[in-house]
Length: 238
Image (cartoon, rainbow, N blue to C red; front, side, top):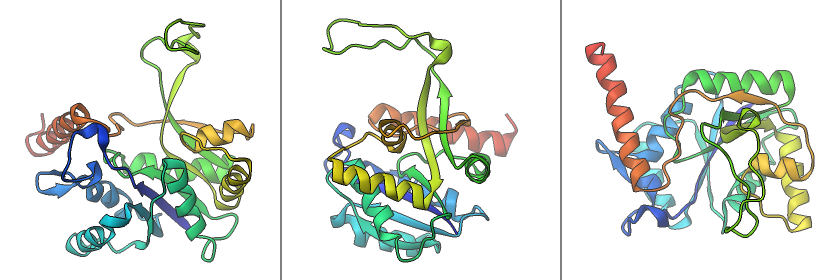
């Protein structure tokens, strides 16, 4: 069983959108979350999708799934207070149907430019190495500061990467890591961060281009420009 766990529980405070969470904002009449879900819906290796959603927007999401004929979504789970909690809620909901060696791809609902190629590479890497963390090389210097005022170090950029998504794992190992974090009181930024806390080995795969996360208004306009450029290339060959 290969499951895509899509977490879309954020409220979009940085988007300056009071009416809708960012994952429900529309581009050309279609919500961002649907663009993301379609990438997994149409991938032949994905067996099912679990979505973690803001509780107050679950009915809206159900209507969108029907409207856009998204059939692989088998569960919609209420989100938690943090992204960490939302991922845990989603993983926990899969206990009765998932086996230890099943594969789960954890992905942001507001990262809609994922490709079929990248999904396939995540699945291949988990089968070969046990997990897959999608990354891209750092394009600018990374500085470390403890107090936000002074720079403690500037690591060699040649060794620096940015963690993106999907982040993919064998179900048994990743649910065990989150259950341990619950006992230890950890709240992590993402699953790669959690694995690093417990010193679990991770395998990197390179991201495809434009695998951006829509966090603020500038990201939304960048997404629209990239999407339209891709459409024009397909239509006009430019």
